[in-house]
Image (cartoon, rainbow, N blue to C red; front, side, top):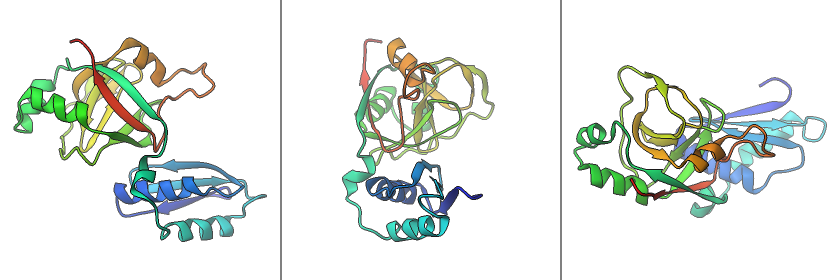
Length: 206
């Protein structure tokens, strides 16, 4: 990836999480950033400190190194307040052959991990081993999804940091304060969520 990065391609998202955890656990000098995605991990380096051949050798060595299961979600935990009032809650539950309350419990009680970020600033793709559902996107995306909306798509859940088009099925809404915290351009760390971070949803009054 040019003269300042190496792109590691892996088989699936689970392998991304494992590799990202290994790389985070033992960053050498010269690694400027680690950017996971659905099937890749980008390793950005300062080649004056860590030449690209050395970076590639480090990534390949870490790909086979042991990693504890808990290290995959080793970041700080964020708790997000949510009201399960989404316009697609009932229809999504029906699609999954669940009662709405059962879908709410499954989402609320799962321990989520930020697998990667993208689509919009502050938008984190969350996954959980306790979430078995593959939720299809809407056939026709909405032209407007409000900030704070919490949606489901494929095996992910996510909260929209700002108003944007989107095709995820909406099951809830974050508290206003939590929505504002998802992305604050004036903050030292603008994005609340980062890869490897643990996330839990706390249900608030509907």
